[in-house]
Image 1 (cartoon, rainbow, N blue to C red):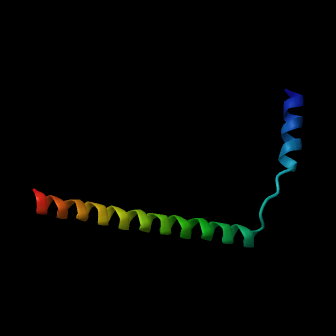
Image 2 (cartoon, one colour; image 1 turned 180 degrees about the horizontal axis):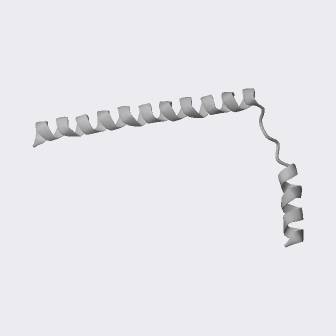
Image 3 (cartoon, helix red, strand yellow; image 1 turned 90 degrees about the vertical axis):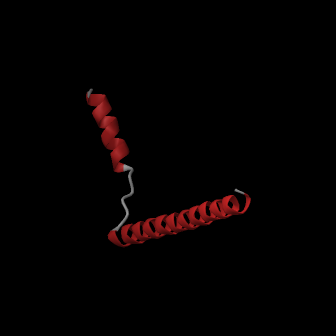
Length: 60
């Protein structure tokens, strides 16, 4: 068990933690990208569902 803890500490020391500025930039990129993807999915869903309803009205 002692060896496992020693190895864990060794691996934990290898982690490179981002500074505050980098963390804020990366978080902003993730949030903006998520919002853009959500917007694209929403628009595609809106177009497909309305398009399907339109086609059903024409041929239904």
